Length: 424
Image 1 (cartoon, one colour):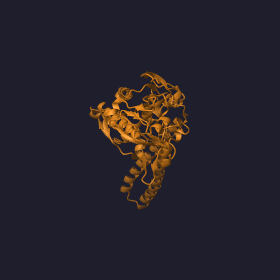
Image 2 (spheres, rainbow, N blue to C red; image 1 turned 120 degrees about the vertical axis):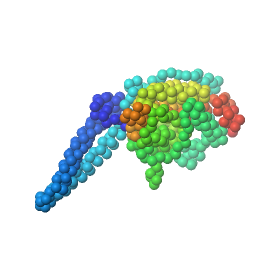
Image 3 (cartoon, rainbow, N blue to C red; image 1 turned 180 degrees about the vertical axis):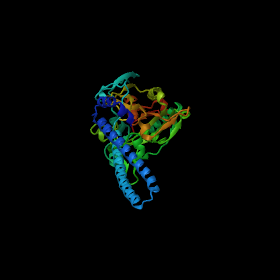
Image 4 (cartoon, rainbow, N blue to C red; image 1 turned 90 degrees about the vertical axis):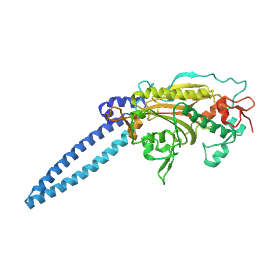
């Protein structure tokens, strides 16, 4: 959430940011209008309460019963007016919060202006493209032939965009998750195993509600929501807390299953397992002081790059444009791996500096060592890495002409002696 002072004092900056994001700037005018109403109502209510307090003291000193009763009646009318203004103030404050909560973060000046992901900028490409003496297969052919991906039974169980991993496929996915979590621990992250369901206020604090309500799964009876990413519970861990300066930075990593309706991506990536309603992801997350968030962002990018490099996958680093930038992000790097069977680059990680956007919504502050006023922390998040696209990249890059798939060396200790996945 943006600071109301920023919108009030620098409205043109916010309007410009919205235009760069390909959004209407009208919400800025709505915020300013509602903020003015709110402040005027606060003045009126405070003046009336002050008057009521003064008259109440005066009534206590009155000896004339008739005059005293008249004042009491007048104060009763004034009380009704105060109640009405309080109700008006509550309504305006709710409306103001609703409008502000729909305004995205302001892009960093380094973020290129663009319409969509086609305007993202390639910063560097790392690794060599694999060379094949045969036509590489896409995972949607390779997986079933190996007997490790079952699309039909996934649909049978849950419908479209679901699948079943079997045997070496399930083991490979589990090995990837375990290995990535362990690597992040070595990189300095503390492992967390959070719930896969959270309360609505946790999603609000992470910036998922109300913006992405239609893309989330909810248990209406218990009013719990399935997490779309571990970023959500990792944000909620310190919601409404005041940390001390010596606690920062905090680095967390967590594995969760993730659940998304994918309504916003209807018609995209319909083949294979590139985009599903349920998927696994290992997350990196950081809390830090504002002056350190740029440094933390680069650290998280290096950690994600190391993860991809150790798997031996060719990848490229992208800087997202304003047209592709996530709702809460100030600046985001994408890591994309080359999938030779699909013949495309697949995003397997987004590493975002969110600034104080989430902390402001979630009420996460820290107290400086000098004891001065508390400040909002900055938060950062990154996939380290996301499944199933990492699994896709491994299968397609390590495939052999006979249809087998070589297991990357770093995963072999977790594969029960399996070094090559062969057709069933």
